[in-house]
Image (cartoon, rainbow, N blue to C red; front, side, top):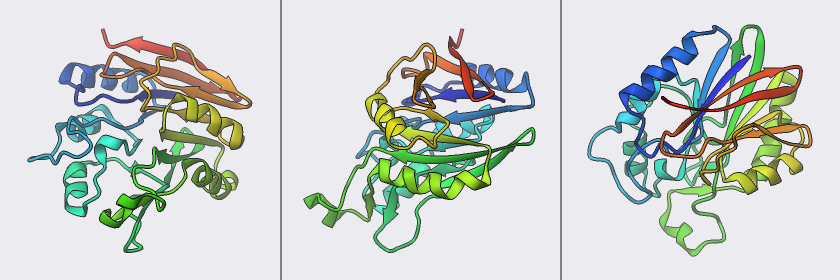
Length: 235
């Protein structure tokens, strides 16, 4: 199985990068493309006046799933919906909960890649927690990503062959997550803008992250429990 990965575009996913991603995905039928959040240009508290072009371009590039980044969140439902308007692929976030009890986004998705069942879940950095005074003004709350990951793996493990965590929590938290939840096979991370030229192994879990602002795309091979490959420039 081949995996393409990007993170933290911050609005820099332009047509030339889209075309490169399309080319890479078209090279093999057993390829999945994931993004680890902060794809849009609008900042944390901003509200876009029109749909963010990043969603259309991720669709054109063939994105199979992504995780919510802090740029894609807001404490108000109308602003939250505006930031996500136009997305076509599953945007995942297992540790996001709404006060009205309705799940704002799917926690995970199961994909078939050439007969390999891939369970993909997403967790992100907690923006507003139950302990914060600001929680009174927010329609949404965020649970602990590590605890949520444990719950997600427990649900997915018997249903899939490979578990992929799409995370927007930063590299150090990814390392802690790998130690705390050994059932994760691959962590594709974002948020800290860390450039991991090659996958890093923590226990039996492989971690990858590709800097920020569209400088790199991660191109990886998953075979026999090993993740190989690394970062490539978009040139």
